[in-house]
Image 1 (cartoon, rainbow, N blue to C red):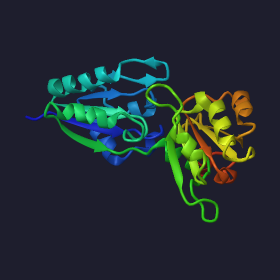
Image 2: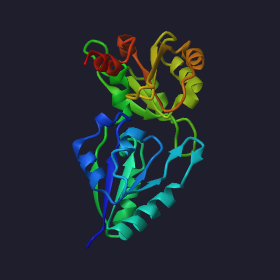
Image 3: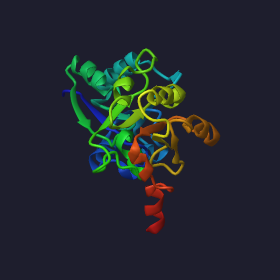
Image 4: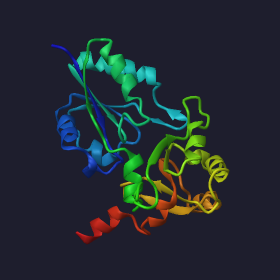
Amino acid sequence: MTPSFYLIGAGPGDVELLTLKAVRILKESKVVLYDALVSEDILALIPDHVDKVYVGKRAGAHHLKQEETNELIVEKAFEYGSVTRLKGGDSFVFGRGQEEIEHAQQFGIECEVVPGISSSLAAPTLAGIPVTKRGINESFWVVTATTCSGGLSKDLTHAASSSATIVILMGVGKLELISQLFSMYRKEDEPIALVQDASLPTQKIVTGTLGDIVEKANEKGVRPPAVIVIGEVVKLAEKQSLVSMVKNSI
C-alpha cells in the first residue's frame, strides 16, 4: 500500500476557522506533526490515541531543522502508512509546505494539500481592515519581512514605492527598519496597524502612523506572531476586533 502525506493549513488559530476537510483528516490521522503556531484548541481535535509530534519553529528557537522535519515525514509515512502535517496559517504562504511535498514525493509518497486561511488575510479582516476598498486602493501585496538568511526583504522597497496596501508577515522584530524604509517612500502619517494573535482571545490591535508605531508597539508590548498592515485602509480599522464583537452578540 502506497504511504500518504496530508499537508493541512491550520489557519490563524481559532479552531472554528479550520475547514471541515481538515477536521476530518485530523480525526482520521495516525500521526500528526504539528508546528508552534497551532493552537491548543486545534490540537484538542486530534484523538488521544493519535501520535502527536512537535516539530515547531519560532524565531531563534527551532525544535527541528527543516531537513529533519522532511526526513521525519518520510519515516512516519512508511511507519504508519500515512502522516499528517499540521502547519499554522496556509502552508503555501511563506511556509515550507512545497519543500516538504517535494521531499515526500521523492520516496513515492502520495501527497494531498488542505489549504488553510492565511494570517495575511485573516489578521486585517479581524481587525476591521479591508485590504482593498474602492476609491482608496486597487491592490494589496503580501510580503515577508525576513529572508531565509535573516535579512530584510528587498521586495519591501518595491512595496513601499507602490500605492498598494502592504501586508507584512514575520516583521515585528524589524518594525523600526520597516517604518524607516516606508517613510522614505510614503508620508510619515501613513496609517499602519499591528495585529497580534489574530483570531485568538489574546488578539491585540495597535494602530498608528509610520512616525509613531514603534513607540506605540513598545508601549503595548506587541510580540510575534503579529501581522503588519500599511496603507490608507488602516483608517477603517475597528477599535474592537470584529471577532470579539460577533461573539459578544451571539
